[in-house]
Length: 600
Image (cartoon, rainbow, N blue to C red; front, side, top):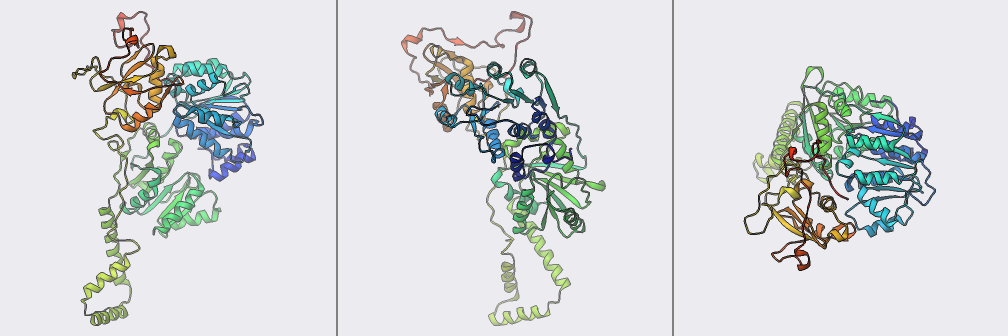
């Protein structure tokens, strides 16, 4: 971990102002290493896992260093997927909030190209693109790369693994030789090494290696909830868990104050702890936690560094940390002095990869947690209420209050038990003993997939697997069992290849190539086999799909034969490395198993 701050890195005042507004206190390890290199104008090879803050590592220095006075794009960022392109574009827009000449435009497949053309005409200076759609724009001459000052390849290993090698090389060869280049990759396969050798030139490295190990006495659990449900889920965890002292970690100093206020409003005794607080106030907050005057502290990483309080039984990662080193540092605040500790990690559906990264780096699995139910919370509230009543009876003079109850009983002709029930009802209104709680969907592995009636193949979160091909027995000629045949209004004369079809379907519907069946290519049309049970929303999406700028005409094939002019044509069938044993194929090299997708 580094002790430097963003103000020490030499960022421009406008960019630094945006960083401060975002609430970031200290750079992550990859940011601390990469930012000075890029500020010096050097090429960079960055090696770091997903979730380590790579976007800021390249965006902050390049926004500080580049000149955005020209109408032509000055900065180009390539990403493997449209989701990442959108995310990176939104992040850079926030960092460029005080740079009036910076206009960020994301360019990706699946969006109407007309929308992108109109956006590009408004003098875009930063382009965030997927390779396939960028090639389409280059062919249309709607994007000019002649004045690019810097290019970044984000998640290069995933990009090349998806079959974009040819497109990436074409793009890099169109970039001016004087342009600064940065490549970020979690791994270094052969394809990435080739790009580095051919196009990166002389470069400096920023490598972040994982050297972490976890605390064995800490029970680690995770809860998957959507962002909008996190506060409610945290509230239930606080009520459902039996704890003494608790640390809740968030990413920014603003979040410490905001979350503390929201929890205070819900009846919890909390305090924020961030680098913005004066040292005396920070020490006072820690002492209050040690003395039991407060039970919950909401903190950032830098504020909690070195914090050692034995009564902390729970650490909650409300915001998943940037890197595994931060995670280990956080959960090390519990389980002190030989005691058992508890660590709870909140993740959103998009952060599943970060969870796997933490498990891999720590060599320890994290168990899934059940959301505390309404019944469990009711039981805890009743126990707390009973204890509060017992303590009140034992420690307070109640004679005058007994007289009030006796007089009320006589006046209303009611038994004391009825009055006690009414008083209990009034007392618990702020925190009902029998709460009616809305259902919060916790996204377990089973719930995150579709129902059994909808094929898991259309869920978008599957594992690739080998299939044993079996043909259907219902008379539909040659179609694989469990699949249906679909028609596409594009063929050889449209210069379409099976790779384009696979890439378009994978990009639009998030269907992995392993789940796309046999493709037959004719002159005027094509057919493709996809798993049965396609949801309506995915079908509508694929109907609107374009393949090499041509409407797909996607529809389910009927029993009607194809047009007579095309019926006798020899179908095109993509070569399969599984059709013949390896020894029967020419050459001595093993078949390439790189997963290939087409354009997004």
